[in-house]
Length: 229
Image (cartoon, rainbow, N blue to C red; front, side, top):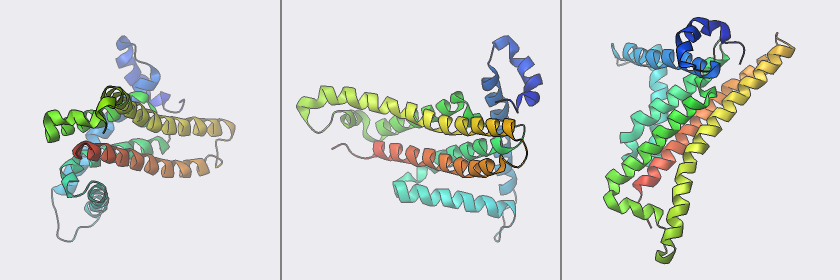
């Protein structure tokens, strides 16, 4: 992307000894403020809780309640312990997506390093939860229902589980990076008014991609909780 470079000159000079690319520097530069601002926002909204909330507290309550209901409906009551993780991923990805619509800002999720980090978190959580829930019997999830096909099924299942990381990474990265490229082309051809419809579509894309990532994360974790057949 070309539009965030002016905002990154000082930051790029700091990272120059590490030989970090411009895209990676942009992702780091805009990921750090998000990771600092979201906890601060959460703290400010919970310092003075009211029986009849308004303003920021009411807005955040609506978002949190919607995510909590979705977690319970998808995973059941035993999915509540994973609500903090799912909500954190959903809000971080949504804010990271939307920040790219602000002139001069770059969405961290348009960099493959950011999306890969989120995907790895889901992958590790899935299998840690599976081992914690089932112990050694968790290996049955990879063996299939037929004993004599177990070696082949194990190989296929392992590839399938690792492909989830690639799928989560590339789906989010591809959509957000593609949207940024389309916006860049429109701004280059006609910088006034014409890109506005694409920016409005970007809001929809941002919400959809955050929702899809959150939904897949819940499905994967839910699968590790179930007993193998």
